Amino acid sequence: SAALNPLKTINEEIFSFADLKQKEIDELKKLEAFRKEFIADISHELKTPIFAAQGFVHTLLDGAVNDKTVRTKFLKKAAKSLDGLDMLVQDLLTLSHIETGQIKMHFENIDLYKLTEEVFEQFENKADKKDVHLRIESQNRQVMVWADWQRISQVMTNLISNAIKHSFDGSEVVVEFTQGKKNVTTHVRDFGEGIAPEHIHRIFERFYRVDKSRSREKGGTGLGLAIVKHILESHNTKTTVDSTQGKGSVFSFKLPRMKQSGTEAEAE
Ligand code: ADP
Image (cartoon, rainbow, N blue to C red; front, side):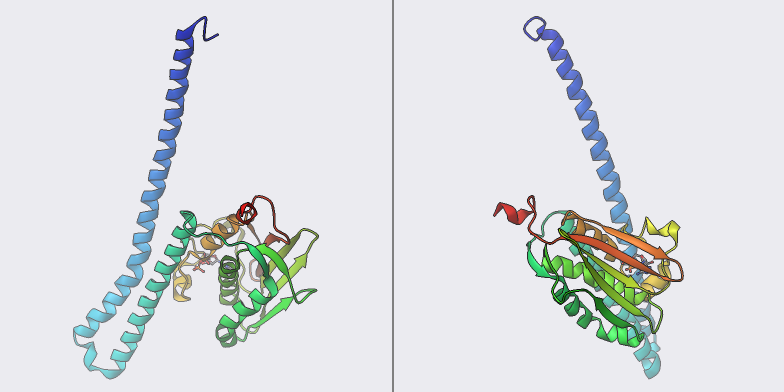
């Protein structure tokens, strides 16, 4: 015991302390590598739209500005690149706020049916352009869950936006609610290109895209699903994906119908 052999105890403590230190060092090294990689990724992503806008503006200054049709075309392209840059920075800020816990979650009883109708309104134009019909499938016209309205609205915005983007023209996007005793599962279903099995496990990674050039062209930042993942994690839940290439995809997540112990609001 410590009283009989104090030196032994001290030695053991020194060893376990050294052990702990090594673990901490490994952890810090991992974090440092992650941070470096993250910065490299972001720089690369930022450079793409900046480089494009720069090209158009410089070509205009070099003389293209005198030709009216070229001028309009190039200005439109530069504006599109800058809009993309703006979206990227917004998504990066959202992600960083969630990750650093700067966003205070506000849990309350929310109506997913109403929330989905509001999100659908945002996408009316986009869906019309592809002749995609937006539809809710639910037993009840009110679907109450315990969640953060603003954050879940962001989740639905990202999932529905993706669903429309990857839908076949003239198909439909269906949001379906299945209500269990304790939980409600939301499914966002599209009939479109789907995702190959080798990509499915990676689509939630930041900046991962199945088709890089096409995704950028369609106005994607590559952060939509990373944001979805983080928000659902902060609701103690996760998204599951079921997808068949050439047929379509379903993204699903579960939320509790009632206040759960352990959520922040419980401590109020
Ligand atoms: P992006 O900004 O590229 O849409 P996301 O993080 O939202 O970024 O999605 C990552 C990738 O996952 C997309 O580039 C796309 O390849 C794939 N993806 C996401 N949702 C769908 C879907 N409903 N159908 C097919 N592919 C999808």
